[in-house]
Length: 235
Ligand code: AHQ
Image (cartoon, rainbow, N blue to C red):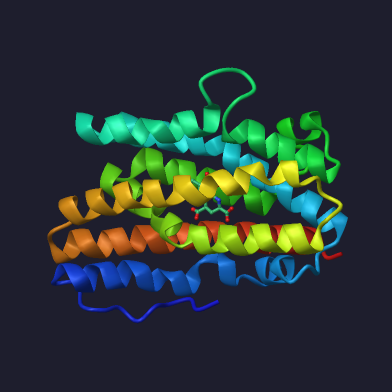
């Protein structure tokens, strides 16, 4: 993993956007666990361990986004940001991304209960996810928005992951992959809004450096999760 990314000059907007996009070098798509996943090399147990641990991330995303809403004083931003909560919680029982993740888990052979009760969540995943929620609760709201910009890099990973699951993990009912298909459109919509907010609100070198640091922190959150999962599920 590249631990540091060469800072580019953020004085103009193009340089600032380039600094944000340069964080792609540290995105968890490059993590060995994801590389092995996308090459079809993971066992059923490793896939199940990843799904069960990632459930803890998914169930915490609405709480992270609610923290952004609570700290954000701008109605126009809140009106668009609140969609993220509905994307995950749905608008009724049995709907939304968290439900879709439970169905992914069932398609791998996990029970809903063993995902919902977090029994498989390893300490490193819990600490990384809790750090992300705490970041959103305690940092300036624009920095929390900036930390979500990992979604700039998500669509490519989702497409690669979907192709890998359909090709290599045929023991998983393709219906269970619906979550990743939905993210192919939700993630670009989300990152477009988040980038618009960050470019509008981060004008000084200090604000821009803080936004890049927030995105770098989030890359560490995602990377640390996979480190912990990789260690807990060696085969
Ligand atoms: O399923 C993912 C998701 O709902 C979100 C919300 C968003 C955020 O607000 O930080 N980030 C995110 C991500 C999801 N899936 C990850 C994956 O690899 O499946 C990618 C992750 C992200 O790029 O931040």
